[in-house]
Amino acid sequence: MENLLEFDNVSLDFAGRTVLDGMSFTLQTGEIACLLGASGCGKTSALRSIAGFETPTAGAIRLGGETVFGGVAQPAHRRRIGMVFQDHALFPHLTVAGNIAFGLSALSRAARRERVAEVLNLVGLAAEADRYPHQLSGGQQQRVALARALAPLPRLLLLDEPFSNLDAELRERLAREVRSMLKSLGIAALMVTHDQHEAFAFADKVGVMHGGRLEQWDAPEALYHAPATRYVAGFIGQGAFLPGKASGGRSVALETGELRSEVGLPFADGAAVEVLLRPDEVRLEPGSALRAKVAERIHRGGVCHYALELLSGRRLVAELGHDQPLAVGETVGIRLQPRRLLAFEA
Image 1 (tube, rainbow, N blue to C red):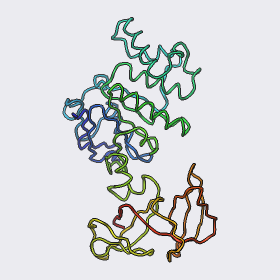
Image 2 (spheres, rainbow, N blue to C red; image 1 turned 120 degrees about the vertical axis):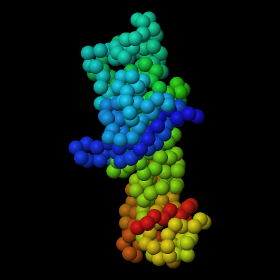
Image 3 (cartoon, rainbow, N blue to C red; image 1 turned 60 degrees about the vertical axis):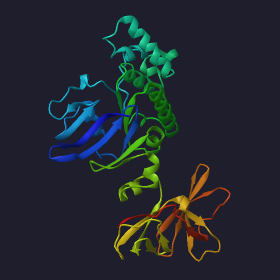
Image 4 (cartoon, rainbow, N blue to C red; image 1 turned 90 degrees about the vertical axis):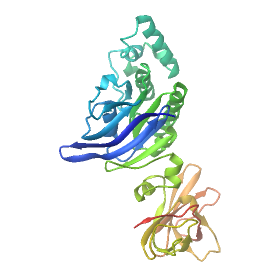
């Protein structure tokens, strides 16, 4: 597959403050990706730079092999990019059909009608064509905004926190629906969000951002199972870090005992490290000498998460089914069984 978007060593400063710091990634034709990070990390600024709404300080942005920033900047309206905003930005005085037709002035009236009908069917709103935005639910308004962005058949669709005003269940469902739509049309997309569940439901690739930098650009599974940095490890999924000391190139000594790695670890003997333990890697073992007290219980749908307090007062998190209920205050035997030893410099 060819690269559709190249974001090449891009920096952006606002009033002396660095918003993007030498950030690079590529997006392939038909690929769906997401920039994920906490508020203020720079993800929306990256999106707006691609759209042409912000002018970076350095670097280059290429679309379909054509430079749109770096040298002569191409104006936003010539980039053939669709954009869906957080607040939908629908025209309240236009019907659903009128909103979608707004960006199709280059087409004949008949072609415009046909394209509007196509995208209304695609987003499941054919029956709502003559209604106005205020007569629609939040999810329906979001579909109209999506249809309007898709109608001109952009080569790239940008989505700025598009589902953040919806409840969690609808947010994930709509993310999956939009993904399916984009895949059927072969349109590449880049979304920004702070919600990792939404990102994982939507994207082939996810970039975790922190302080204007891209910490890791990878498949969702790799971010969870093979985080490249301490920040990614703590940001993605759930778990707890235990401090320890590297030993012998393949082991870490923790307060719970020694954990060995199948591969060599990049630490000197005695180096202070932190080991990440996911909830499904903390197992109950009644006869174990390693004991922990149940400090807290949190229901998570079909499972429970238990905060288990070690003698030192540090806590681990264990994920158990409802068939293994534990009482707060009881002491249990545990065993640590990481699939892969994830250790980071302390």
